[in-house]
Length: 202
Ligand code: ADP
Ligand code: MG
Ligand code: MG
Image (cartoon, rainbow, N blue to C red; front, top):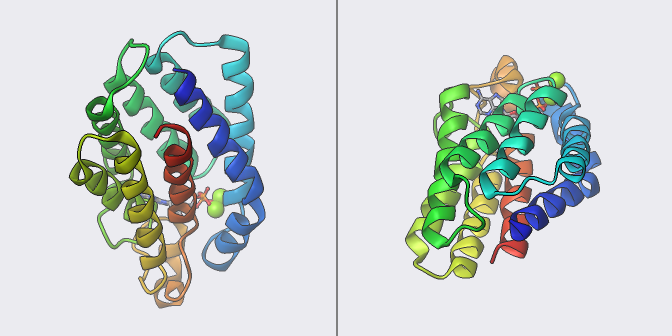
């Protein structure tokens, strides 16, 4: 619970710090709002968690997801919102998550993104960072810190691997071949999410 709150705080801080970078990436292959979308959403999440003080892991994650869905327009709000909602449902009304439960909750969250966005590996989306991350987490073993570091490293590699891809989902797909050579903004924010997890939940 306290650890999950630190994760959300850290992600919000990283999004604020990288807001301009995220928007610059989105200006190349989208509509230049990914940084402002997420910064606005995470600011609203912090306000909601401060006023509500959820008592369980599930409640905290679900409040995070609902706030993102309701405050972030565009693709990333419903996608990250669904990630946290599904993660919260999988986590349940518990105080804290062990290594296996955290891995299962992360995987459920990523499953929510796929259900919502129909993304496949190589479509040049946030899924290209998240899918290898949950696989690396599961492969890493029982120690949560090592699992999260492996997940964060895999997310970074997945983010970098979006550069040569042609986008097949979202706004960037409208550009066709002109999307090649640019790093996907959503994969970049997803790598921030895993990096924040490795710093706070390990
Ligand atoms: P919008 O494109 O509506 O302006 P954002 O700029 O906030 O929304 O988010 C764009 C990001 O959303 C993309 O970089 C990509 O990673 C992600 N995205 C878009 N469509 C999908 C999808 N169908 N599945 C997964 N991720 C997607
Ligand atoms: Mg955008
Ligand atoms: Mg937009």
